[in-house]
Image 1: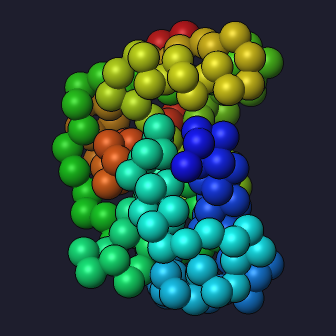
Image 2: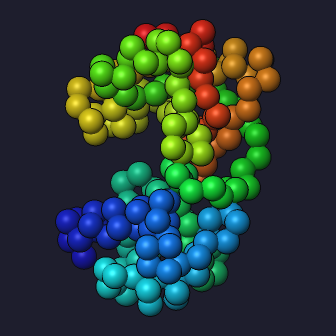
Image 3: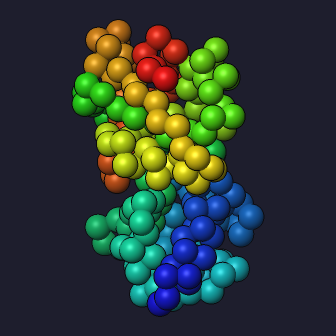
Length: 177
């Protein structure tokens, strides 16, 4: 399958598994898992099981995971629908990063980082990943997050299957601009 087809199918899966499963009549379980066979049958963008596996394996951000028996699939994070990823709190690295663009900085300086319509704020363990994330909307601005201080202050962190650090919010006092 070409990179263009992988990208197209990945974007479609993101829409369905992270935001609008109901648009194709798909029901996710409380942990965000969808039945693979049901997904393939109801999908408006037709693809085979092998193509689905290829999208999961080759997605540049590793957004999806198949269950061990490959009968279920879910998005690793980024949901705007309520699900429980069943992640356990973890101690984060001392410093994490967040990629954004300049037009959001005034709001971030006042309110900090908020999850907005998602279930968590997404943070990266390295600058390169944060730059990739920030560059999706323009010239990236990288914010440095004092995760160690947040953890000391009893703020919870989780790490998704693909290494994205998640938290409920990041108050401004923990952000270096």
